[in-house]
Image 1: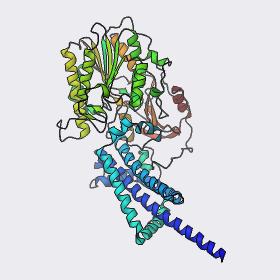
Image 2 (image 1 turned 90 degrees about the horizontal axis):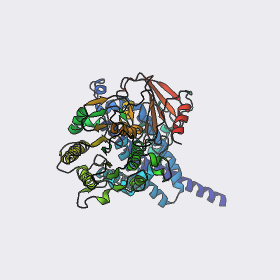
Image 3 (image 1 turned 90 degrees about the vertical axis):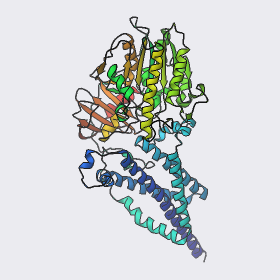
Image 4 (image 1 turned 180 degrees about the horizontal axis):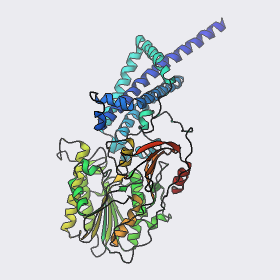
Length: 581
C-alpha cells in the first residue's frame, strides 16, 4: 500500500514537472519567436537590397531575405528551440518566484538585445555589460522604442500565461512542445561564415570553437607605434583643435549630404583612407590621444586601466603639448564620469575638463547631454578663457550623433532621425569654424575633424559593412594649406604623430607596408589587411577561426574581394595578444 502511494506521488510529481516544462517552453518560445521575428525584420528594414534584389525579379523583400539568409535563420531558430528547451527543463524545479524573475529578466534582455541589434547588428556582448549598466548609458538609451519592446514582450507574456491558466491552454502548450522540440535535434544547416553570427545563433546559447579547421601559420607586418617624445624644435606653436564627431563614418558625409564636411574635405587636407583600430569611444580616444593599440580580444579597455605611473601618460599627445607650454582642455557634452573620463583625462595631460555639469543648465538635453551646437558654444567659451599669449590644445567630443540622437525638434523635420543628427552636426561644425574665424583663430590653429568610431550601416557584403565600421573621416584644416587628398592608409594610432607632422609643416606619410588592424569588439572580430598581398583575414577573437579574402586593392572598396576559405591563425593570435600586453 505504501509502495503504491509512493508510486502515485512520483507520478504526480513527474506529471506536474512535465506540465510546467510544457508551459515554460511555450511561454519562452513565444517571447523568443517575437525576438527572432523582430530581428529578421530589422535586417529587412536596415538593408536596401539594390542589385541583390534585382537578381530575384518578382520576389518580395522578405522572400529575398529568406533566399539570402534562410540557412542562417534556420540555424538561429534551432538555437532558439534549444534555449527554450534547456530553460524549460531547468526552471520547473525552482521556486515560483524564481520562474517569474527569470521571465522578467528574459523580457528585459530580449528588449535590450533588439536595441543592440538595431544599432550594432550583433548580440549583446556580456563582457560589455559594465558599460551598458552605467547610469549615464541607461538614461541616455532608454528610448521610446525600447519601452515599446518591453511593453510588447510583457503583453504577450501575460496573454500566454492567461491562456495557460485554462486547461485547454495547458494542453495546447503540451501539444506545441511535443511538435516543436524534435526540431532541435535536426542537423544544422551549414554555417555561412559570411553571414552575421547573430542571425545564426541565440544570444544565450554558446557557440563552439571551429576545431576542425586547419592551422594557417601566416603572420602580419604589424607596426609598433613610436611614443611621442617632445614637440620638434622646428614645429610651429599653432593651436590645436581636435573635433570628434561621435559615431560619424566616412560614409556619413555622403549618406547625409554633410555639405560642410564635404566642402572642407575638398578645400583642405583629407586623409580619405583613415581607419580606426577598434569600436567604442574609450578605445577611439585611447588610440588617437596615446598612440597605442587598444585591446582586440577583450571587452576591457586600456583607457580604463590607465594609472598615473603608466609611461604612456607622459607621451600622450596632450601631455607632450602641455609640457611644451600649451594650455590643454577637453570638452564634451556627456557626463564625465562615464568611461572614467573624469579620472583619465587629467592623467594624460588635460589641465581643464568640462562635461554635462559644466554646460548651461538651461540648455535642452538628452541623456547624453546638450546638442552639438550648444557643446561648441562651450568650446568657444573655453577658448575665450585661454591666455591669448600661449598656444592651446583642445579636444571635444560630441554626442548628438549617438543614438537616440539629440536634434532640435524643428530641424530637418520629416527626415530620418539619424540623418537629421548628421546634418545638424554638420551645421554645428560650420558654426564652430565661423566662430573661430570671427576671432581670427583659424590663422594660427590646426583643426582636425574626425570621429571616435563609426555607426553607419552601408550596403554590400558582410565584409563591406564590417570595414565601414572602422572607416572614419579625417580632415585637417590649417592656415594657407592647399587642397590635398591623401590616399595612404592612416590608422588611429597615427593621430599623435600626424598632429606633430602638421605642426612641423609636413603632411603625414605613414608606412604603406604595414598591416592594417581593424577590431570590432562588439561583434567579437578582428581583421588584418596586408597591403602588399591584398589579402585580408577576418577572425573571431574567441578562437581565431578566420575567414580569408584575396584580391583587395583598396580597403575602401572590398566588394570585389574573393572569399577563399577558412583557417585557424594561431600565429596571428599570438601577434594580437602581444599587442595587448
